[in-house]
Length: 137
Length: 281
Image (cartoon, rainbow over all chains, first blue to last red; front, side, top):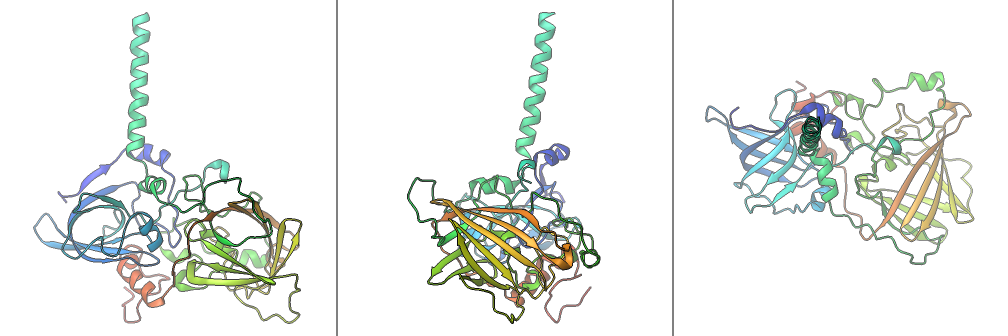
């Protein structure tokens, strides 16, 4: 998977620094939260929704075959807080999306952010949270 | 000697700097996102307020220190055999289950009662509408509501419901809300390892501590689960919002489509609400 760029490593330090995200709707055990990858793709579907917004992208693999990727994003309020609107993406837009991959290798991923054609980069992480500090527990 | 010490210090500083840079570079995007997120929290002020006025839109502030976890500062009382028998398989692990069978309040569009609703005040605000003789409380999540009847007694023959029956009275500047009449079909919260029983009894204490802060302190009782022992130490400190509630309806068909599209490929289909014509494997 040549096009996949590993943008974050140093896992042991990351685990110490990063709190485990929690969800308002479901857990994230199926995703590898220690890895952040990115792909360039063409938008095939985009929907702001509760409990989670979703977007899909066509991505060419190493063999030149087009594969569809589905990304889970935040709920409507969270997306709006981050600047998303119903017209932010349209089918055919070419974007770069950043995500935590599925542990089972499926093309269903936990979206983090999208680099838009207009140069903006919008966060879309569905957990959007962190566990409290020890003092707060 | 001086020179060696200097070289050692420079190396040590360089190591610290490198570790710090890697740590910053690998910060969770969620962490970055939340600090950048816009919030509608009304700023702190010395503005005068009526302590008996709890109206307005309230939410946990979106700051890195606010927490989603809704945990007590006190240990849970010992469980009865009924409580032990009803512990969820694997307990609550906040998504560390590889399947979704661990569940969560509101899964598959199930109702979310109070106190479970208070698990989500980080994401979804509530609105208190103060009316003569009652406070109408609206929860953005799943668009649910309940009434807190002021200076009234619980009806004698209560029909059990998800939300139960809530009555409140003022003790000085604190509104004490007593809720019974639960049907026992809901979770206590996302952070308690077993459901509530039909004998669950909730006592909430609402205190507006300043113009933009509302403190809620809670004690849980459930003789079927904890015998006569109360479980206190649950608090939520909400901030007044310059905001309005948004539509948040859990539509089973939409939920099922989301599960089919996103959850099934990663988690499998166990415990999922899926469209009726979806093959299980």
